[in-house]
Length: 313
Image 1 (spheres, rainbow, N blue to C red):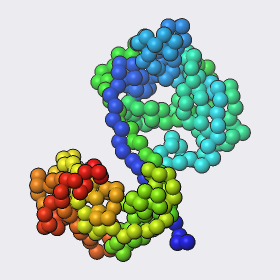
Image 2: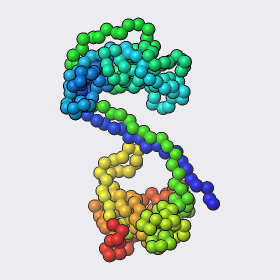
Image 3: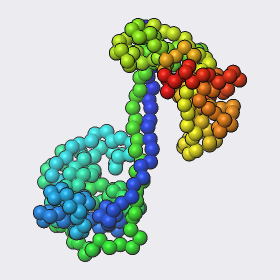
Image 4: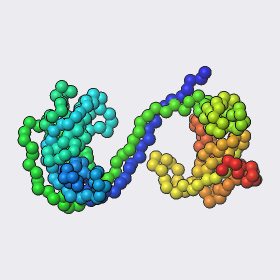
């Protein structure tokens, strides 16, 4: 059996969100080295603050300042920090109940080793040198042997409050396409497109999935399809994607390759975007060294009849 492919992949995008008055005050306070919580209906002070009461679900906005010192309530040692974590050397993840708060805040504790950490340990905030109004304004916690720190007397009113944040979402993982799609990808290296036929319904699926999605039975009979095909439906892309060197607008389409019973998607080129249409006959365009077609272009053939592809919409 040929070797099954695998490769490291990264999914990453910026997540932008606006802030309500409570979260805005909390993050702006961190920028000013002030920690704010919110008082719930049962009298507890919640840190980090929430916008709705966890008991009554009512909106809450009674801000309360708490101290930057506190007590570890539980912890776990992180012996191998990962990219983007608060510290680059081994540290402890800790839940800290700040003095004046009734709930605990999760963050990192800079400690020389796990033997230096215990439940009940007193700690204080180590502020980041540059603060922008984010949870990272707390660089980490550090051991503290003194009394609770004094409060600043803040009411939660600040000049130039933080109105929104941008957080980077990222997922690193190893992807394996499996036996069927490995064969499909390897065939593309030879500028061929290979699908698999279901032994029950006889449909040919491209890209192959290793099993028929309709009948649920394994597929292993390989069938070469295309290279030409028919545009079944399409969309016009008007927003330029980051790190994608394609000028907008352009067309992304579902293409039913000749001999296939499932449409695949690809970019359409070689024709003005406003002339692309359902039924357009297209063929692949390859670039040197590529493992897949760069795009599809019109073949010059007459458009396919709607009845020839309507089941693939």
